[in-house]
Structure formats: C-alpha cells, structure tokens
Length: 450
Image (cartoon, rainbow, N blue to C red):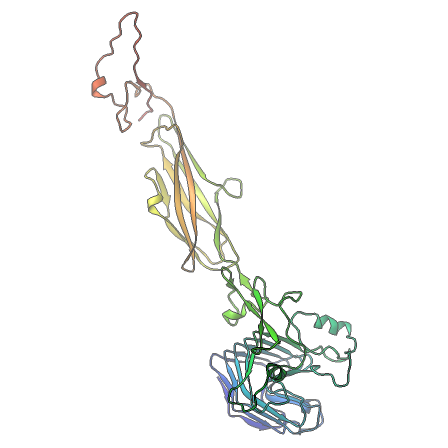
C-alpha cells in the first residue's frame, strides 16, 4: 500500500499508533502538512508531521520511497516538525529506502526535512538514501531532541538512567536532558548516503551538504565498544556524502558466513543483533554408533573365519558444525565402494536444525575372502553440500581385517590356484616321492573352511 497526495492542517496527516509497513515499491509521496503549529499551545501542538508515529506506534519502510513531501511550519519558535515525526515510545524503521526531495518551510531552523526524533523515540535506518531538496537551506534532513544546544558551552551532566541509555552502542541523541525528561532519542544510522540533486542551482561543498543531512551526534564508528554490527558481521565506515568526513557504519555478512534467516530483509541480518551472521554448515566429524569417543579417524571392520563366515556392520553418525540452519545433503561415490563392502544408503539429507544423524551403515562379509598379511584399506568418498553448494568432501578410510582358522579338511600340499582357491594345481597332482635319507622342499597351503 502507499500514501499519496494527502494534505492536512493541524499537526499531522497520517497518524501511526499501531503498526504500519510500507514495503517493496510502496510510497509516501506528494503530501503536504500546512500551518502545523497553530493547533494550540500544548506539547502535541509543537510537533508532528506528514507521517506522525506516536503512542507506541511502529512504522517500517522497507525498500520504499518517501518523496516530494512538504511541511509548512509557520508557528512560533520551538516547534519540531518533519515529514516523519517520531514521538516518545514510538519507533521508525527505514530499511533500504529512498527519501527524495522532501522539504520543510519553517520560521526557524527547528525541525527536519525528512525525520525528527523526539526524546524517547527511536529511529533505526539501514541503507537510507537521502536526496536533499534544493530549498532545504537551514533545516537538516534528520534532526532530534538535543541535536543543538543553544547558548550552552558544555552539556550538563546526565541522570544515571539517561547515562545508561546513552551508553547503548550506536545511539545518537540528546545528552543534556534533565532527569525528569524522557530518555534521549535512540537513533542508529547504518549505510546512510546523502546528496544534493544536480539540478540545484546552488552548488555546495561536502561540508555544507553534511550540515543538511544530520544535526546531532554523528553515527557510531566501527571501532566503537561494544560493536555496532551484529555478531560475526563485518563493519566498514563509509562516507555519507562523497568527499566529506561524515561517515556511517555499514555491516555485512561476508563469505563464507551467511545472513541469519528471519530478518525483515536479508541485508538486515548483519545489523540486527537478534539475527546476525551464521557460519556455514559443514561435516565436522564421523563417529561409530554405540562406541565411546567423539570421533574416529577411520573405521575398522574385524572378521574371523572359523567353521562359518562372519559379517560385521558399523553404523556411522555424521556430525555437523556451523550455526547456519539449512538442509544438508550427502552422497557416497559408488566408485569408491569395493566389492567386499556394502554401504547403504548412498544418499541422504539432514534437516536444517539436525546437528547429527545416522547416515551410513557399512558392512563386510568374510565369504569369499582370504586372510591377508595387511588389512584391506579403502576410502569412501562422501560429498556434502548445503544449499546446492559443495561444502565438504569427506574421505572416510575403512580398514578390513580378516583372521582365519585353518581347516585340515581343506588344507593341501602344493600351491593354491591363482584365484586363491585351495585346489591342487595339475602339475602337483601326483604323489610326492622322497628318497630315504634325503630332504625335499615342498609347498603346503593352510586353507580355511571355504
């Protein structure tokens, strides 16, 4: 939805006392607020705007446009109006939105062309682009209570409550309110950009443009303590006006980290501490089910052949690291599975929140196998991908050891067949002739029951 071509007098045009969201192409545009301070001498009569957020209301502008709005404040001094006005207890969120050609005409330079935040109000702006109106010669785009202290060389001391509030990271606002006043306005600005349209006849320096952007304390810097960005986010100080010294922090989740899900917009996770950046999921370990230990570097299959064959099976657990919540898919390369092993299943998934799961059953059978001097070694090639991207290739060594018991019934003189079968070769099928008093070397093969 959009708010278009609205015109009013007496303090406000659109009142927000609940929740309002303008998103993805919505507009607040071409609205006027006239003679805004003429409704009386009450506190309410000295503030307001085209969009007036009050009584605990919350307004969110997400990828929206606020343009060509005009405020006319022709009342006495000490009135504080703006296109968007945020009262105590109210909150304005501006996410990746454009403020374009908004203006205020006032008998003083109190108030703001775009946003004014009163004591106890909140403004969180991430990716706010501000194009300054040509006529905005005195009032900044963003202003707040305490943004300017006339006739004061130094701000008075804070009450304990106000001091604690001002210590919150990223807060911009009044630092000179008496203890009886509401808390200072909480203003957090990230990735703020501003410029004067090239169509303006008056050319201004970067410093002059900065004066039209913001009045009050500057945005927090990346080296602030505590950090201004959400956990694991990368912070960089970026110029608000090209060539100027005013900066605002910009937060991002840089690869391999990814933004947490659930934020109002994917690009906001790096700013909002309740979301932040997540480390990608990865295969951290493989363990054998029902065996002690946090992990095994390899799997051992031990088989003993006596009068019958033996089968050994290992159930393997795949453990997943990383804080990202995303489905993990794994697959075993069939070419890496030798004929004497059975691996099932060859593919599978782990749920977005599963930290481990029984993912493979590996079995070996002694049937048709013979004893070797060294264990048989094979390496399973397991590919793990998250979100369609291959994250890991897990090489899983498996050792197979076969111990046999000799059987007199199947053991024989001579050598076995090339394929290992205990069947005498034709050339050795005749009787062994040994003369009395002589020693003759011959072969004897000890065979298992197969």
